[in-house]
Length: 313
Image (cartoon, rainbow, N blue to C red):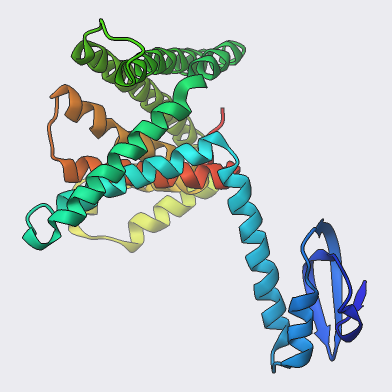
């Protein structure tokens, strides 16, 4: 489909494309969907201010529109908004920790603390309906054929449902709907259920990794590859503990083909530091908690933007 730039002044919509060929004043496109944007201003700009590389300008413009659509789709999801709030919350916690000793930044630290508190309150509001979602997810995982995955996913979702119940009760107390409850006790129970769900999810991740490693070790091409690897790197560590090197090589090769498993494992490990610190089992500091929370939040955002990077089931 061809569009002439000069005669396109009064057009109201244009087909988005997978590829563009720009020759003279003609745009050749392969249409895939319609954008309800007014592109004529952009095309008039190309005509009035000709560029040496108009194809590059057009590619950049269409890419910007595509990214805008992705962002709008992401923020329209409650899960996407929660991930943004969570990343902001832990980024504020990390920045607040890094600036704690700077006297000139006291006002900034106060603003960060205020923003962190607001992000936390906003997330509690977003999580009001998550109890039902977790229970439905637990019901759906009962049909998984693998008994280990069925057990892990079902109990992880039930633990999260109990965590959300405690979290909702704490939110109701914070706004004055409920008063006669022990805040510290409910907060501790909430943290325990959250910790339990993370442990079960990590167990699932380890189980999946072991399966991937067993499958990879039976591959003949992998056997040749690992022998070549051990022969090419005859350093001291490999000579002393070749089994360890072979194990690490097998682990990396297995995860390389399944980035979703690697990301989910890293996310759960980072999240684990948060309840451990709250329960006093393994106390670190606000900086470590903020950093781990920020990393896990960014991985969560990536998994929402790229569904193929979300572990299944």
